[in-house]
Structure formats: C-alpha cells, structure tokens
Image 1 (tube, rainbow, N blue to C red):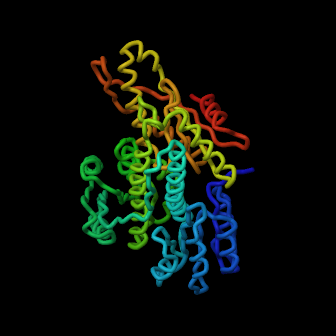
Image 2 (cartoon, rainbow, N blue to C red):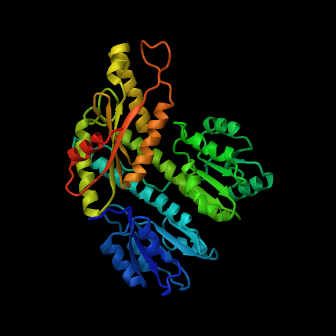
Image 3 (cartoon, helix red, strand yellow):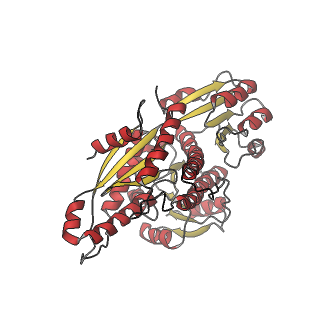
Amino acid sequence: MPSYSARVLVYDADLEHPFDLPAKLEQHDYFCIQVENEADAVEAVVKAHPDVVIVNTLPAESSWSALSDAVHTTWRNRQAPVILIGESAGIEKKVASFRSKVADYLPANFHDQQLFARLQALLRINTMHEELLRRIFTVEKYGIKDIEAVSPEVEVEDARVVLLGRDAAELDELQEALGSQRVVARLDDPFATMAALTEKGVDGLIVASQGEDQDFFGFCSDVRHNSRLFNLPILVIVDEGVFEADEMQLARGATEPIQRPIMADDLKTRLELLIIQQRYRFAVRKVFMQSLRPVTSDGLTGLYSHGFLHEHLASQIADAEEWQKHLAVGFFDIDLFADINAEFGYVAGDLLLRQIGTMISGLLRAEDLSARYAGGSFVVVLPETPLQVAEIALQRIAAVVRFTELAIAAAEEPITVALSLGVTAFEAGDDAESLIARAREGMR
C-alpha cells in the first residue's frame, strides 16, 4: 500500500476545474479527493479524514457554513486547515467564514510553488499538533500526568523581521506591507545582516534579490548552517518568471520565493503563517522538554531513552500504516568515537555525546523525535516525512555538526567530528526494530 505526504480534499464547484489540482497534487505525492458540491465535501471531511481542504471560491458564491462546521468537528483531536482560492476582493470575509486562524489564501493566478509552500506550512502545524498529543500519550504510559498541550493559535503582532536588499524603494514597500513596528533592521550587506539575525532575536528574514545576486543566495545557505538560525523563516523576493528556477533557489536555503510585483497582503500572510509555525514549534518544544523526565530520558545526553523510542515509534508506525502516511527514521553514529575515548578519556567522550545530542535535538523540527540508541549512536524519527526530504534534513544536520567546533575535557583545542548517517522509510510489516536496523545498515 503506497504512502502519501497528505490527504487533500479539493472542493471545486467549477465543472471545468481550471486549476487541475488533482493532477498537480498527485504528481507531488498527495492523495487527492475531489468533490463538486458542498454536501459531498462535508461527507468527505467526515469519512475520508483529509489533512487539508482546498476550496475554489470562484465563480460560485457560498457561505460554506456546513463545510466550515464539518472542518471544525475534529477527528483524532485534529482539524483540517483550509486554503481558499479566489480574488482578493472579499477574501477576508471568506476566510472568516471558516473561523480558522490557520486558513490560507491563494490568488486565482497562483503559481504551483505557492500552492505547495502553503500546503507544507499548514500541514507542518497539523503534524506538530498531532505529534504533541501522541508524545503526551506515550509519556502518560510512564505515569506522568501533569503535561498539557498547547494550541497552534499563536499571536504574531510582535514579530521582529529583518530586511536585506539593495533597492531602497523596494525596502520601503516591504516595510509598509509588514508594518514599520515589525522591521527591526534594513540592511544591504549580508555580513551585517548575519550579525543582526543573531543579535536581535529575529522571527523572520526577507531577502529582496536583484537578478542573479549570488551573494544573497549564498547568504541564505550560510544562515542554514548556523545552528541558532537553522529554522528561521526566509522569504526571497524574485523577479517575475524566476519561479521556474525555484528549486535552485530553495536548495540554497530560502523557505519560499515570492514573485514580483509584491502583493502586500500575500507577503504579510506568508510571513505570518511561517512565524506562527516557528513560534508554535518553540512552544511545542517546551512541552516536550517537560516530558523528558528521568524515567523517559537518557541520563547522559538528556534525549529520550532507548525504551521511550521503541514505545513511541510503535505508535507512529501504527498511525502511518492506518492512514498511509510517510514515516522516516535516521541513524547517526559518531565517527571514531572509540578513538576519542581512548585519546581524551571517557569524561571527554561523555561531554562530546551530550553536546552532539543537544545539537541534533535542537536542529530537528519540533515534531521530530531524537533518542540515544547506544554508545555514540542516535536515532531520529521524522513523522509524515518522505524519505527524500528526511535525507536532505539529516544531511544538513550532519553538515552543521561537522562545521561546529566542540570543546571537550583534556583537549587543548576545540575539535570537530563527523557523523555517519543512515536513513530509511516505513514499509508495510515494519516494526520499530526493523526500521531502526535498516537505517543503521544504510549508514555511510
């Protein structure tokens, strides 16, 4: 049985289906359920359990009240966020009709990259929320009953943003769109911008590129190699027609490209949703820290224990199998760890383990789980994540570790270490042991 990135319900009353959403979604590994009237949409929400709902608001006018009610009748403590497609006029009223703070909007002339960026952002919030509830459930098996979930409804009025660009007029436009109180720095030099990002407690970065500005795109990549800025939302403003090269843009570190001419509402919505996702990630991480008690964690590294890993992974496997979800598992091993113990002593080795464990945990997404497996080995579980995406994410973590100098006892100078990495994906019939073993066998 195949696995999918998500189940997407498409409600499109236009019989010509001008956006051809099913074909686009299926091409990008989504399971699509298409309906043409509200009654079928409500039935699909109740029975098919979509992870996200896309509604074409053109050309028909409707209150969508029944669909809105169905969407907000949660299943498995989870509701399906909504993306509306339509004209800007009256969009606030349409969004409000769904009573959802995580609803998103696409203009009728949207580019495919915009669609999938919004899908991914909304689905991440859902994944974080569901993993939070699952983590609490696993912790309760250990007799811990005092942990409460947090809501993904996060306020972002006090968000702090840095602008990087060389066109003063465009920076004025960006600042007006976002609100002057949110922009804490306007800079034209990547070096100064990096300092501002690390010093000012920034929530987001907007890079206004001009043509083939290699310095700016290289800068985005540098940000991703900074452990403190690893997950910072980065929007890159690009010229019209550059979307065809967006894979190159994103590979260099940007979260999403925004095409000129800039639509103020669209830019603000994109940034706010990414910041909501980032802040919810921090809130979820705080709750996860509460779940790291002596009975659930490894005493040396502070990560989840071997036993917790197996208990929790079994629940994730059952969920992936029932709902045809992706599930990836990674295995890290510190290269030459025995040699480090032999040269510097076991105290130094223990300190190194704790530092690397902390780095791995801090560089993961909120919904991912990291655990000490044994010796110098760590296991990472990435729910609802395709294998290819997991490989890229874990390779980036290995790169950050490799470029970080670590101080250990008995070493006169800081040292650097490399991690061997193996990644695998859930297959029918897997259990926790087989998944971990396959990831370990694939190390390189």
